Image (cartoon, rainbow, N blue to C red; front, side, top):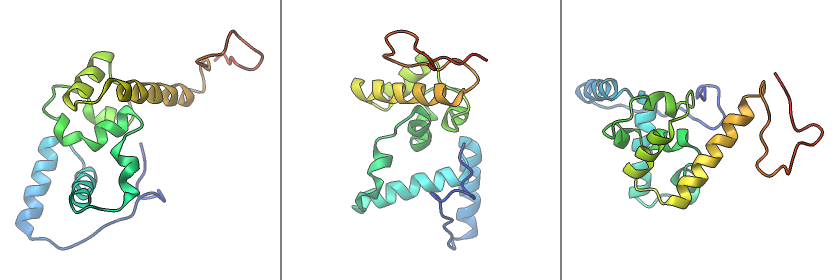
Length: 150
C-alpha cells in the first residue's frame, strides 16, 4: 500500500465546495467502502479524460497489476460481487482465480491483457515474499543462486 502523504508520486489537491456536497460525498464514500482520496482520484481521471487531457494518463489507462485495476475501477466493481475489493486494491491480498475472472469479465478486459495483468501481479507478489523460494519462469533447472530457502 502506498503512503500517499510521503510519496513523490502524489500531491494534495484542495478546493472549496458546498457543505451539503461534502456531506453527501463522505456518506457515499463510506457506503461504498472507498477512501475519499481514491474517490477523488477516480473523479479526476474521468474529468481529465473527458476533456482530452494530456498523455500523462496513459500509464493509468492500462493497469499493470490486479491491485491497480481494482483501484482504478473500484466504483464499478462494487456491484460485481467480489467481497474483498478494498484489500485487493491495497495489494494486501491476491484475488482467487475465480474473483480475478469475475473482475476482468465485469470490466470486459481482453484475454491477452488479463494474462499480462495476472502475470505482472504474480511476479510482484513473488518478489515481495523474499523469505521464500525465488521463482523464475524459464530457469531451465536450478542454478546456483536461484533458490533461497526460509
